[in-house]
Length: 314
View 1: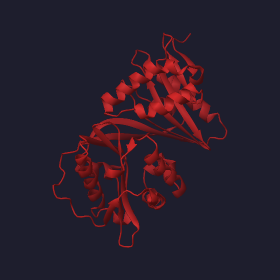
View 2: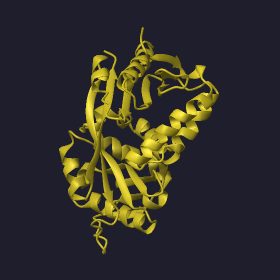
View 3: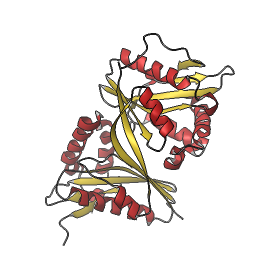
View 4: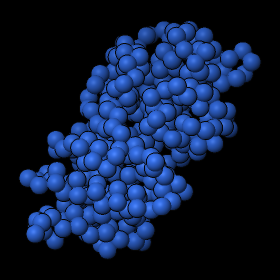
């Protein structure tokens, strides 16, 4: 008989999840300088209302020692989080949770695609279990740089006009983003890049939901060319009192290699410095060597590796 038991999250009281989620929050802050509480403040009421699909693992006690949750939006499923407390059987518990979530999503005939991006803690690795169920693995890297490291005291000239963030331009930014990612490895990871409509929903999520941090409009910018077309932008968010995150930066293919990205990045860094942030982070796909090299030239250094996983129904 297995020493690990599992139960649907909607069979548990909200209070039963609090110690586990407190430890998860502490790990995010200690390892990634990321305050996960804004996300948990959304999840906990859903758990209390029995509305969050997912499973909890029990490894020898009455309190859950791990959990996973997932969401389904029309034909696409997403695994939102996975965390298990450190223990000898933590890897086994995590793999069991992944198997349960995948089974729910893949057994649903209406789901044609599943995406997951998960930071592993306590030395765990999820590549084997996802690969077992037909997922493709994309290694990704969490990069970090100090705000003060290498900011030019005089802002470099931009090849295009930089304006403050304007959410009324999101629809236009989405169209440009779709063009940017059409031949990009991240096009395979995130289906939101496939159409302007999906991309617009994705960008609106970045500025309204805390999943990638709390949006910082004062540190986010848009670039316009001479005809007032959007040719680039940067979205910045707060993930803790000390650290910011860039969940999205893009430059139109016709403007790449002309200093537009550096101008946007420097404008963002200078603004964050004035707001007393100490560091900034972002994520890049390892296979995207050009972007990896550019970010390192901009002062970012690898901090943590993790995996993105995708499955498509054949």
